[in-house]
Length: 178
Image (tube, rainbow, N blue to C red):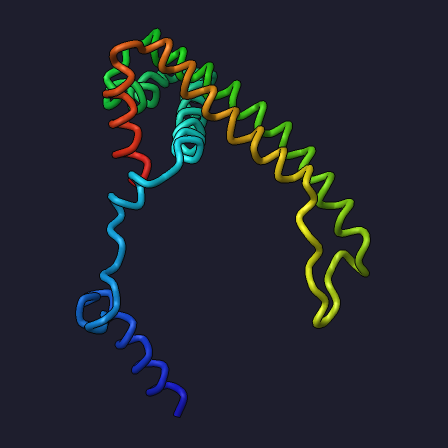
């Protein structure tokens, strides 16, 4: 008896994925398009994600080179589509690593504060019907500092790229969701 119900549920889900407009009711707003969601990303979020992508591809390139292979094709996945030359790609990588390293340090400090807050509760968990405590002000300050790190990285790239920065920023925002 469970099998037909399961099949029915899967069919409904698949039909909803295939024909999303059919499941939107007349008064409900249309689903948000991915492009507008990407355009609305705060700068610190967009640059953090892009810096992570840069760091991963450059690290993979270094591993390939350490193994005796060329890693240039991986670096080119960052530089060519963005319209950057090799020197600008190197600067992008340097800024990305600097920002990610600084953010990691703040993350470790935040983790320590969170552990300290959790230690006040039995096994680090809230009891039934217990209200969560207020967010420690130190965490909000650390988050602001963390956001500022990636905004500073964006500004460093702006200085490095000069007139090409606007084109690079448009590129970054169109590729973040891919």
